[in-house]
Amino acid sequence: MSVSVPGEIAAFLGAGTPAEWTGAAVRSLDDLLIDHANCEKKAASTALALMFRYEGQADLVHRMSRLAREELRHFEQVQGILSERGIAWRRLEASRYARGLREHVRQGGPERLVDLLVIGAFIEARSCERFALVAPMLDKDLGRFYRGLLASEARHFEQYLALARSRDPAGVDERVRVFRAVENRLATAPDTLLRFHSGPPASGGA
Image 1 (cartoon, rainbow, N blue to C red):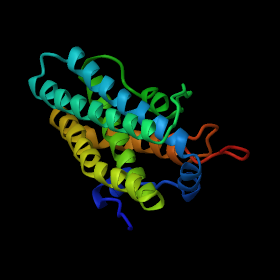
Image 2: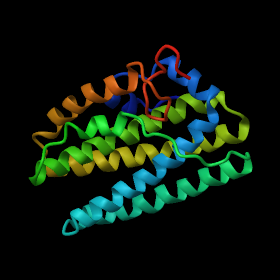
Image 3: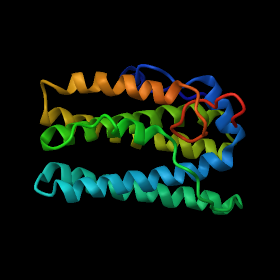
């Protein structure tokens, strides 16, 4: 069953995932699933960190609390899939993606929060796009699972972007443009690691 990348997600991202990444990801499914579980843990951790750092901002705390619970539920679901398929947990080196985005965050004040929220929107949007890309290439059960995650990732993208816009209505579009250029390079340029948010494998990679 084909799955379409939501139009607003594709427009926000700008550059689509190269076909080389999709093919390599399906061939390295064990690593993809383990890294997916790591991504869900990190997403929950990020939401909790924002709750603690900006605890006086009630709208953000409410959204992040709900998001953290949902990300942890997804983590538990991926853990269950790993167990069912007999895939042993192992530590994987993190990709360059999140680190590369955070290198461009402004330091201090409300500007830092806006940038972190914009980064959150890009991470969720890229996740949504890649779920849509891999779902048709997987077995029936796993494909159904990934199709089921599309709506939640799209919703998380919208929530992060709305929170950023509410804090800097005039300036957020420029920050989106800045981070889009960085994100597109990280997601499409050849990469030494194959991870859920990596670029396609460099020559000699997975």
